[in-house]
Length: 299
Image (cartoon, rainbow, N blue to C red):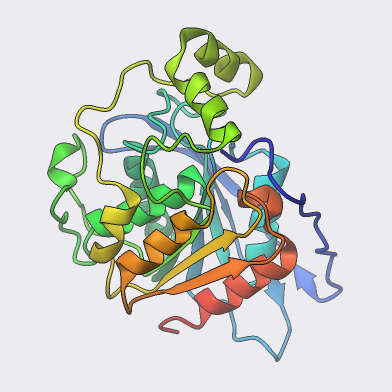
């Protein structure tokens, strides 16, 4: 859902800062609770001497990309670059994407990939974790936050996942969901009808494998996972931000509004004028606003 943007395509305006230094990223393969290897990258925070912003401290952003993305895609790296000005960043390729193992389940078992990345971020010494997901990744961060308790015990609904044992350190402290669907099986737009063809048809899965470096599982969901709109009420009191563009060509505005309604008085909704879909459409000003908002939560 991140390849082929709807609306305008954001271009990076981040420029090297004369008083900014960067350390070498760390790359490794993590292993999920069900045994899938996940290609992961840790980018330390840029050291920016800017008195108008608080220091990055122990803050880390764990970025969950959209469908057909991976850690090496330029639009994913642009998001990483923007967030390193606020804290460290962990990003990873979901199962079936890029160099990661396994096959994509299009948002189901991907919660285990995100849990492994969050644990790694905490093992690296970070105590404040912000999960930021785009499109498919946006649905994953919502479900992950609903399934994993801060004390490391799984919430109701986690028992259906092999390897979802809720070990300590798998929870998030702040959740940001960008361009996410509210419900499954949505086919109301042309891009989503094309995506369903890609996922459900053998010839579509071949296009995914060789055209988008995305290996898609042929099995249907069984059982059907908790939907994003069902997950949202279970996230409180963890801070929640829902971001959506009013020109999103994949999911119209009833999706973010359903999510916001499900959140009730908890969380915030940003409807962005002129914004299209996911990472491609999230410009640097929006990413900076997200970074500022996330840094202010519980800091």
